[in-house]
Image (cartoon, rainbow, N blue to C red; front, side, top):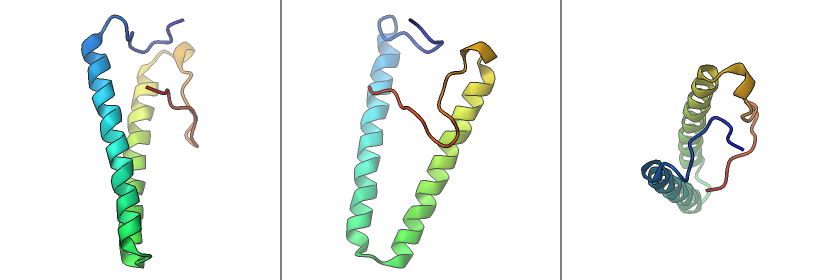
Length: 89
């Protein structure tokens, strides 16, 4: 059953782009971990990282909200603003 998203079988270019994006997201998560480990509990470093994560999270939520606003009401089944499911790639 198709829920208004892209069809993996019919669009290999989009599939490849999303795979690359998923790889970049994993690399970003590893960078966050490295910053945490190298901060050695330094409050300034942790505060800077928290701000980066906070901005990124807000940007992603805004993008999701834009996408949901553009969808017909009957097809909006995405996660709530507090969080939700992320499709595994």
